Amino acid sequence: MVIASIDIQGGAVVQLRRGAELVLERDDGEALAFEFDRYGEVAVIDLDAAMGSGSNLDMIKPLLRIAECRVGGGIKSAGQAAELVSLGATKIIVGSAAFRTESGFAVNDAFLDALVKAVGRECLVVAVDARGGEIVVDGWKTPTGLKLIETARLVEKYAGELLYTSVEKEGMMGGADIAAIRELRAAVSCLVTVAGGVSTVDEIAEIAAQGCDVQLGMALYTGKIALADAFVASLNWGKASDGLLPLIAQSSDGQVLMTGFTDKEALSETFGRGNVCFHSRTRGSLWMKGESSGNTLELLRLRADCDRDALLAVVEPHGPACHTGAWSCFATRQRYTLQHLQRIIDQRLRDAPAGSYTASLTDERVRRKVMEEAYEVCTARTHEEFVWEAADLFYHTAVLLSRENVHVDEVLDELDRRHKTPAC
Image 1 (cartoon, rainbow, N blue to C red):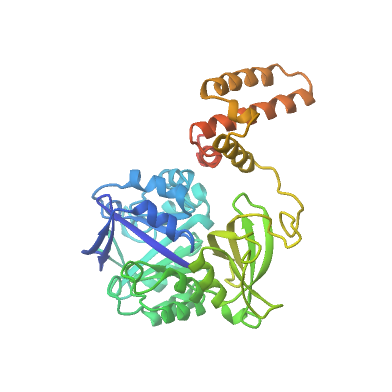
Image 2 (cartoon, helix red, strand yellow):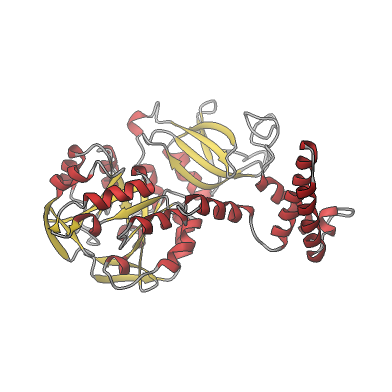
Protein backbone atom coordinates (compact mmCIF):
# COMPACT_ATOMS: atom_id res chain seq x y z
CA MET A 1 0.00 0.00 0.00
CA VAL A 2 1.13 3.54 -0.73
CA ILE A 3 0.32 6.28 1.77
CA ALA A 4 0.49 9.91 0.70
CA SER A 5 1.62 12.37 3.35
CA ILE A 6 0.12 15.75 4.18
CA ASP A 7 2.52 17.54 6.54
CA ILE A 8 1.08 20.69 8.09
CA GLN A 9 3.00 23.61 9.53
CA GLY A 10 1.68 27.08 10.26
CA GLY A 11 -1.67 26.22 8.69
CA ALA A 12 -0.12 25.22 5.36
CA VAL A 13 0.83 21.96 3.67
CA VAL A 14 4.63 21.80 3.56
CA GLN A 15 7.53 19.58 2.65
CA LEU A 16 10.74 19.86 4.62
CA ARG A 17 14.21 18.54 3.88
CA ARG A 18 15.54 16.54 6.85
CA GLY A 19 12.71 17.94 8.93
CA ALA A 20 14.03 21.49 8.95
CA GLU A 21 14.53 23.21 5.58
CA LEU A 22 11.31 24.38 3.93
CA VAL A 23 11.20 23.16 0.32
CA LEU A 24 7.61 23.85 -0.68
CA GLU A 25 4.34 25.18 0.75
CA ARG A 26 0.73 24.79 -0.40
CA ASP A 27 -2.72 25.87 0.79
CA ASP A 28 -4.92 23.17 -0.77
CA GLY A 29 -5.03 20.55 2.01
CA GLU A 30 -8.65 19.51 1.45
CA ALA A 31 -8.19 19.08 -2.30
CA LEU A 32 -5.05 17.02 -1.68
CA ALA A 33 -6.85 14.78 0.81
CA PHE A 34 -9.66 14.17 -1.67
CA GLU A 35 -7.22 13.28 -4.45
CA PHE A 36 -4.85 11.17 -2.31
CA ASP A 37 -7.75 9.13 -0.90
CA ARG A 38 -8.27 7.49 -4.31
CA TYR A 39 -5.02 5.57 -3.83
CA GLY A 40 -4.89 4.68 -0.14
CA GLU A 41 -4.82 6.06 3.37
CA VAL A 42 -3.46 9.56 3.91
CA ALA A 43 -0.92 10.37 6.62
CA VAL A 44 -1.72 13.76 8.18
CA ILE A 45 1.15 15.02 10.32
CA ASP A 46 0.93 18.13 12.52
CA LEU A 47 4.54 19.33 12.47
CA ASP A 48 3.90 22.24 14.82
CA ALA A 49 2.44 19.89 17.44
CA ALA A 50 5.33 17.47 16.93
CA MET A 51 7.81 20.26 17.58
CA GLY A 52 5.83 21.66 20.51
CA SER A 53 5.23 25.00 18.79
CA GLY A 54 1.47 24.97 18.19
CA SER A 55 -1.44 23.01 16.77
CA ASN A 56 -3.17 22.68 13.39
CA LEU A 57 -6.14 20.66 14.65
CA ASP A 58 -8.73 23.02 13.14
CA MET A 59 -7.20 22.43 9.72
CA ILE A 60 -6.92 18.68 10.28
CA LYS A 61 -10.51 18.02 11.39
CA PRO A 62 -12.17 18.48 7.97
CA LEU A 63 -9.58 16.19 6.35
CA LEU A 64 -10.67 13.30 8.57
CA ARG A 65 -14.09 13.16 6.90
CA ILE A 66 -12.77 13.70 3.38
CA ALA A 67 -10.26 10.83 3.40
CA GLU A 68 -9.17 7.80 5.39
CA CYS A 69 -6.50 9.51 7.47
CA ARG A 70 -3.93 8.34 9.96
CA VAL A 71 -2.91 11.26 12.18
CA GLY A 72 0.31 12.04 14.01
CA GLY A 73 2.26 14.87 15.57
CA GLY A 74 2.46 15.79 19.23
CA ILE A 75 -0.01 13.21 20.55
CA LYS A 76 0.74 12.98 24.26
CA SER A 77 -2.30 11.34 25.86
CA ALA A 78 -4.77 8.50 25.37
CA GLY A 79 -7.61 11.02 25.56
CA GLN A 80 -6.14 13.04 22.70
CA ALA A 81 -5.79 9.89 20.61
CA ALA A 82 -9.36 8.81 21.35
CA GLU A 83 -10.66 12.24 20.35
CA LEU A 84 -8.90 12.04 16.97
CA VAL A 85 -10.37 8.58 16.34
CA SER A 86 -13.82 9.90 17.24
CA LEU A 87 -13.32 12.70 14.70
CA GLY A 88 -12.63 10.13 11.99
CA ALA A 89 -8.94 9.20 12.14
CA THR A 90 -8.40 5.58 11.07
CA LYS A 91 -5.09 5.26 12.93
CA ILE A 92 -3.01 7.25 15.39
CA ILE A 93 0.72 7.81 14.95
CA VAL A 94 2.78 8.44 18.09
CA GLY A 95 6.49 9.13 18.32
CA SER A 96 8.17 11.28 20.96
CA ALA A 97 5.84 10.46 23.85
CA ALA A 98 6.34 6.75 23.25
CA PHE A 99 10.03 7.08 24.18
CA ARG A 100 10.05 9.63 26.99
CA THR A 101 9.58 8.67 30.64
CA GLU A 102 10.05 10.52 33.91
CA SER A 103 13.48 8.96 34.32
CA GLY A 104 14.69 9.64 30.77
CA PHE A 105 14.45 8.03 27.35
CA ALA A 106 13.01 4.52 27.29
CA VAL A 107 9.93 2.78 25.94
CA ASN A 108 7.01 4.38 27.78
CA ASP A 109 5.04 1.20 28.50
CA ALA A 110 2.38 2.96 30.59
CA PHE A 111 1.64 5.48 27.83
CA LEU A 112 1.51 2.88 25.07
CA ASP A 113 -0.65 0.55 27.14
CA ALA A 114 -3.11 3.41 27.77
CA LEU A 115 -3.23 4.13 24.04
CA VAL A 116 -3.99 0.49 23.23
CA LYS A 117 -6.85 0.54 25.72
CA ALA A 118 -8.17 3.80 24.27
CA VAL A 119 -8.03 3.11 20.53
CA GLY A 120 -6.97 -0.53 20.08
CA ARG A 121 -3.63 -1.98 18.97
CA GLU A 122 -4.81 -2.21 15.36
CA CYS A 123 -5.24 1.58 15.29
CA LEU A 124 -1.85 2.41 16.83
CA VAL A 125 1.19 3.26 14.72
CA VAL A 126 4.47 3.87 16.54
CA ALA A 127 6.92 6.10 14.66
CA VAL A 128 10.48 4.81 14.97
CA ASP A 129 12.28 7.77 13.40
CA ALA A 130 16.00 7.09 13.32
CA ARG A 131 19.26 8.78 12.45
CA GLY A 132 22.30 6.53 12.24
CA GLY A 133 20.31 3.65 13.72
CA GLU A 134 19.28 5.74 16.79
CA ILE A 135 15.74 6.81 17.64
CA VAL A 136 15.26 10.60 17.52
CA VAL A 137 12.30 12.59 18.86
CA ASP A 138 10.93 16.15 19.11
CA GLY A 139 10.65 16.60 15.37
CA TRP A 140 13.92 14.68 14.88
CA LYS A 141 15.88 17.21 16.93
CA THR A 142 16.63 15.14 20.04
CA PRO A 143 18.66 11.91 20.07
CA THR A 144 17.49 9.33 22.62
CA GLY A 145 20.27 6.77 22.75
CA LEU A 146 17.72 4.06 21.90
CA LYS A 147 18.74 1.64 19.16
CA LEU A 148 16.28 1.24 16.30
CA ILE A 149 16.03 -2.55 16.03
CA GLU A 150 16.08 -3.24 19.76
CA THR A 151 13.46 -0.55 20.43
CA ALA A 152 11.24 -1.69 17.56
CA ARG A 153 11.09 -5.16 19.07
CA LEU A 154 10.09 -3.69 22.45
CA VAL A 155 7.23 -1.54 21.12
CA GLU A 156 5.86 -4.13 18.71
CA LYS A 157 3.56 -5.65 21.33
CA TYR A 158 1.68 -2.34 21.48
CA ALA A 159 1.75 -1.38 17.80
CA GLY A 160 -0.33 -2.68 14.97
CA GLU A 161 2.19 -0.95 12.73
CA LEU A 162 5.59 0.75 12.82
CA LEU A 163 6.40 3.85 10.78
CA TYR A 164 10.12 3.91 10.03
CA THR A 165 11.64 7.14 8.76
CA SER A 166 15.31 7.36 7.89
CA VAL A 167 15.95 10.97 8.90
CA GLU A 168 19.18 11.23 6.89
CA LYS A 169 17.23 10.31 3.76
CA GLU A 170 14.08 12.34 4.42
CA GLY A 171 13.43 14.90 1.67
CA MET A 172 16.77 14.24 -0.01
CA MET A 173 15.38 12.28 -2.97
CA GLY A 174 18.50 10.13 -2.93
CA GLY A 175 16.93 6.73 -2.37
CA ALA A 176 15.72 4.82 0.68
CA ASP A 177 17.96 2.95 3.13
CA ILE A 178 17.09 -0.50 1.79
CA ALA A 179 19.51 -2.33 4.10
CA ALA A 180 17.98 -0.76 7.22
CA ILE A 181 14.47 -1.50 5.93
CA ARG A 182 15.38 -5.14 5.35
CA GLU A 183 16.85 -5.44 8.85
CA LEU A 184 13.79 -3.87 10.49
CA ARG A 185 11.38 -6.03 8.50
CA ALA A 186 13.20 -9.17 9.63
CA ALA A 187 13.18 -8.04 13.27
CA VAL A 188 9.41 -7.54 13.76
CA SER A 189 6.21 -9.27 12.67
CA CYS A 190 3.80 -6.30 12.72
CA LEU A 191 3.09 -4.09 9.71
CA VAL A 192 5.91 -1.77 8.68
CA THR A 193 5.57 1.44 6.68
CA VAL A 194 8.68 3.10 5.31
CA ALA A 195 9.32 6.80 4.72
CA GLY A 196 12.34 8.85 3.82
CA GLY A 197 14.24 9.11 0.56
CA VAL A 198 12.01 6.93 -1.64
CA SER A 199 12.39 8.46 -5.09
CA THR A 200 11.60 5.83 -7.74
CA VAL A 201 8.84 3.38 -8.59
CA ASP A 202 11.42 0.59 -8.65
CA GLU A 203 12.25 1.34 -5.01
CA ILE A 204 8.57 1.10 -4.11
CA ALA A 205 8.37 -2.31 -5.77
CA GLU A 206 11.51 -3.45 -3.93
CA ILE A 207 10.18 -2.27 -0.57
CA ALA A 208 6.79 -3.84 -1.27
CA ALA A 209 8.50 -7.13 -2.10
CA GLN A 210 9.91 -7.10 1.44
CA GLY A 211 6.37 -6.85 2.82
CA CYS A 212 6.46 -3.15 3.71
CA ASP A 213 4.21 -0.24 2.80
CA VAL A 214 5.57 3.10 1.60
CA GLN A 215 4.73 6.64 2.73
CA LEU A 216 5.46 9.27 0.09
CA GLY A 217 6.12 12.97 0.53
CA MET A 218 8.76 14.88 -1.38
CA ALA A 219 8.84 12.54 -4.41
CA LEU A 220 5.07 12.91 -4.72
CA TYR A 221 4.91 16.70 -4.40
CA THR A 222 7.79 17.31 -6.80
CA GLY A 223 6.22 15.03 -9.41
CA LYS A 224 9.06 12.54 -9.41
CA ILE A 225 6.60 9.73 -8.57
CA ALA A 226 2.94 9.59 -9.61
CA LEU A 227 0.58 8.03 -7.10
CA ALA A 228 -1.04 5.84 -9.76
CA ASP A 229 2.34 4.33 -10.66
CA ALA A 230 3.22 3.93 -6.99
CA PHE A 231 -0.06 2.14 -6.27
CA VAL A 232 0.50 -0.35 -9.08
CA ALA A 233 4.09 -0.99 -7.99
CA SER A 234 3.07 -1.63 -4.38
CA LEU A 235 0.85 -4.62 -5.17
CA ASN A 236 1.80 -8.28 -4.76
CA TRP A 237 2.17 -9.17 -8.42
CA GLY A 238 4.15 -12.25 -7.46
CA LYS A 239 0.85 -13.89 -6.45
CA ALA A 240 -0.98 -12.75 -9.59
CA SER A 241 -2.17 -15.60 -11.80
CA ASP A 242 -1.24 -14.79 -15.43
CA GLY A 243 -0.53 -11.23 -14.28
CA LEU A 244 -4.12 -10.75 -13.09
CA LEU A 245 -5.48 -9.78 -9.68
CA PRO A 246 -9.17 -10.04 -8.66
CA LEU A 247 -11.05 -6.74 -8.36
CA ILE A 248 -14.37 -6.25 -6.57
CA ALA A 249 -16.51 -3.21 -7.40
CA GLN A 250 -18.62 -1.87 -4.53
CA SER A 251 -20.96 1.11 -4.35
CA SER A 252 -20.23 3.85 -1.84
CA ASP A 253 -23.04 2.61 0.44
CA GLY A 254 -21.49 -0.87 0.65
CA GLN A 255 -23.31 -2.90 -2.01
CA VAL A 256 -21.17 -5.33 -4.00
CA LEU A 257 -21.80 -4.78 -7.70
CA MET A 258 -19.51 -7.11 -9.65
CA THR A 259 -16.14 -8.83 -9.71
CA GLY A 260 -13.54 -9.07 -12.43
CA PHE A 261 -9.81 -9.12 -12.98
CA THR A 262 -7.28 -6.36 -13.46
CA ASP A 263 -3.67 -6.07 -14.54
CA LYS A 264 -1.12 -3.24 -14.55
CA GLU A 265 -2.49 -1.77 -17.76
CA ALA A 266 -6.11 -1.84 -16.57
CA LEU A 267 -5.19 -0.22 -13.26
CA SER A 268 -3.31 2.58 -14.99
CA GLU A 269 -6.28 3.16 -17.28
CA THR A 270 -8.67 3.11 -14.32
CA PHE A 271 -6.79 5.97 -12.66
CA GLY A 272 -6.35 7.82 -15.94
CA ARG A 273 -9.98 7.59 -17.10
CA GLY A 274 -11.63 7.84 -13.69
CA ASN A 275 -13.80 4.83 -14.55
CA VAL A 276 -13.04 1.24 -13.55
CA CYS A 277 -11.31 -0.83 -16.22
CA PHE A 278 -10.81 -4.58 -16.18
CA HIS A 279 -8.77 -7.10 -18.12
CA SER A 280 -11.33 -9.21 -19.94
CA ARG A 281 -10.23 -12.84 -19.94
CA THR A 282 -12.82 -13.58 -22.64
CA ARG A 283 -11.52 -10.90 -24.98
CA GLY A 284 -7.94 -11.12 -23.78
CA SER A 285 -7.74 -7.33 -23.64
CA LEU A 286 -8.44 -4.16 -21.71
CA TRP A 287 -12.12 -3.43 -21.12
CA MET A 288 -13.71 -0.41 -19.46
CA LYS A 289 -17.02 -1.28 -17.81
CA GLY A 290 -19.76 0.56 -19.67
CA GLU A 291 -17.71 1.56 -22.70
CA SER A 292 -20.51 0.36 -25.00
CA SER A 293 -23.58 0.46 -22.70
CA GLY A 294 -22.72 3.71 -20.90
CA ASN A 295 -23.19 1.97 -17.52
CA THR A 296 -19.81 3.03 -16.17
CA LEU A 297 -18.36 2.62 -12.69
CA GLU A 298 -16.94 5.99 -11.65
CA LEU A 299 -13.93 5.45 -9.38
CA LEU A 300 -14.03 6.93 -5.89
CA ARG A 301 -11.15 4.99 -4.32
CA LEU A 302 -9.12 1.82 -4.73
CA ARG A 303 -7.90 -0.31 -1.85
CA ALA A 304 -5.74 -3.43 -1.66
CA ASP A 305 -6.43 -6.23 0.81
CA CYS A 306 -4.05 -7.21 3.61
CA ASP A 307 -1.96 -9.44 1.31
CA ARG A 308 -1.95 -6.83 -1.50
CA ASP A 309 -3.18 -9.46 -3.99
CA ALA A 310 -6.85 -8.46 -4.30
CA LEU A 311 -8.46 -5.08 -4.87
CA LEU A 312 -11.64 -3.28 -3.86
CA ALA A 313 -12.90 -0.41 -6.01
CA VAL A 314 -15.42 1.87 -4.31
CA VAL A 315 -17.45 3.39 -7.12
CA GLU A 316 -20.41 5.52 -8.12
CA PRO A 317 -22.37 3.33 -10.58
CA HIS A 318 -23.96 5.06 -13.56
CA GLY A 319 -26.64 2.54 -14.46
CA PRO A 320 -26.91 -1.22 -13.86
CA ALA A 321 -23.65 -3.05 -13.22
CA CYS A 322 -24.68 -6.44 -14.60
CA HIS A 323 -24.78 -7.19 -18.33
CA THR A 324 -28.29 -8.61 -17.79
CA GLY A 325 -29.59 -5.20 -16.79
CA ALA A 326 -29.75 -6.08 -13.09
CA TRP A 327 -28.51 -3.59 -10.50
CA SER A 328 -25.57 -5.87 -9.66
CA CYS A 329 -24.27 -9.29 -10.59
CA PHE A 330 -25.55 -10.49 -7.20
CA ALA A 331 -28.90 -8.72 -6.82
CA THR A 332 -31.68 -7.72 -9.21
CA ARG A 333 -32.49 -4.46 -7.48
CA GLN A 334 -30.60 -1.83 -5.56
CA ARG A 335 -30.91 -2.19 -1.79
CA TYR A 336 -32.83 0.70 -0.28
CA THR A 337 -30.53 2.78 1.93
CA LEU A 338 -30.65 6.25 3.43
CA GLN A 339 -28.15 7.35 0.79
CA HIS A 340 -30.40 5.99 -1.98
CA LEU A 341 -33.39 7.78 -0.45
CA GLN A 342 -31.52 11.07 -0.44
CA ARG A 343 -30.42 10.63 -4.06
CA ILE A 344 -34.09 10.21 -5.07
CA ILE A 345 -35.08 13.27 -3.04
CA ASP A 346 -32.28 15.37 -4.54
CA GLN A 347 -33.46 14.45 -8.03
CA ARG A 348 -37.10 15.31 -7.22
CA LEU A 349 -36.10 18.68 -5.76
CA ARG A 350 -33.82 19.41 -8.71
CA ASP A 351 -36.17 18.33 -11.53
CA ALA A 352 -39.47 19.27 -9.80
CA PRO A 353 -41.65 16.91 -11.89
CA ALA A 354 -45.33 17.78 -12.11
CA GLY A 355 -47.36 16.31 -9.25
CA SER A 356 -44.28 15.46 -7.14
CA TYR A 357 -45.07 15.58 -3.43
CA THR A 358 -41.38 15.91 -2.62
CA ALA A 359 -40.97 18.92 -4.90
CA SER A 360 -43.98 20.57 -3.21
CA LEU A 361 -42.30 20.50 0.21
CA THR A 362 -41.10 24.04 0.74
CA ASP A 363 -38.69 24.76 3.55
CA GLU A 364 -41.48 25.95 5.86
CA ARG A 365 -43.82 23.06 4.97
CA VAL A 366 -41.25 20.31 5.44
CA ARG A 367 -40.27 21.66 8.86
CA ARG A 368 -43.92 21.49 9.95
CA LYS A 369 -44.12 17.93 8.61
CA VAL A 370 -41.02 16.84 10.55
CA MET A 371 -42.56 18.12 13.79
CA GLU A 372 -45.89 16.50 12.95
CA GLU A 373 -44.34 13.13 12.10
CA ALA A 374 -42.16 13.18 15.24
CA TYR A 375 -45.31 13.59 17.33
CA GLU A 376 -47.00 10.72 15.49
CA VAL A 377 -44.02 8.43 16.12
CA CYS A 378 -44.22 9.26 19.83
CA THR A 379 -47.96 8.56 19.96
CA ALA A 380 -47.92 5.35 17.87
CA ARG A 381 -49.24 2.31 19.73
CA THR A 382 -48.74 -0.75 17.58
CA HIS A 383 -45.66 -2.17 15.89
CA GLU A 384 -47.10 -1.43 12.46
CA GLU A 385 -47.88 2.17 13.45
CA PHE A 386 -44.31 2.71 14.68
CA VAL A 387 -42.89 1.42 11.39
CA TRP A 388 -45.28 3.53 9.30
CA GLU A 389 -44.76 6.75 11.25
CA ALA A 390 -40.99 6.26 11.55
CA ALA A 391 -40.79 5.86 7.77
CA ASP A 392 -42.68 9.17 7.39
CA LEU A 393 -40.28 10.83 9.84
CA PHE A 394 -37.19 9.45 8.08
CA TYR A 395 -38.46 10.60 4.70
CA HIS A 396 -39.40 14.15 5.74
CA THR A 397 -36.16 14.54 7.71
CA ALA A 398 -34.23 13.48 4.60
CA VAL A 399 -36.07 16.12 2.57
CA LEU A 400 -35.13 18.74 5.14
CA LEU A 401 -31.51 17.61 5.06
CA SER A 402 -31.45 17.99 1.29
CA ARG A 403 -33.03 21.43 1.48
CA GLU A 404 -30.34 22.44 3.99
CA ASN A 405 -27.60 20.92 1.77
CA VAL A 406 -26.68 18.38 4.46
CA HIS A 407 -25.75 14.89 3.25
CA VAL A 408 -26.99 11.93 5.24
CA ASP A 409 -23.38 10.70 5.48
CA GLU A 410 -22.57 13.79 7.54
CA VAL A 411 -25.23 12.74 10.06
CA LEU A 412 -23.88 9.19 10.12
CA ASP A 413 -20.36 10.56 10.61
CA GLU A 414 -21.58 12.52 13.63
CA LEU A 415 -23.20 9.40 15.09
CA ASP A 416 -19.95 7.54 14.46
CA ARG A 417 -18.05 10.30 16.29
CA ARG A 418 -20.36 10.02 19.29
CA HIS A 419 -20.04 6.22 19.29
CA LYS A 420 -16.25 6.54 19.44
CA THR A 421 -16.31 9.20 22.16
CA PRO A 422 -15.77 7.51 25.55
CA ALA A 423 -18.27 9.79 27.33
CA CYS A 424 -21.03 8.58 25.01
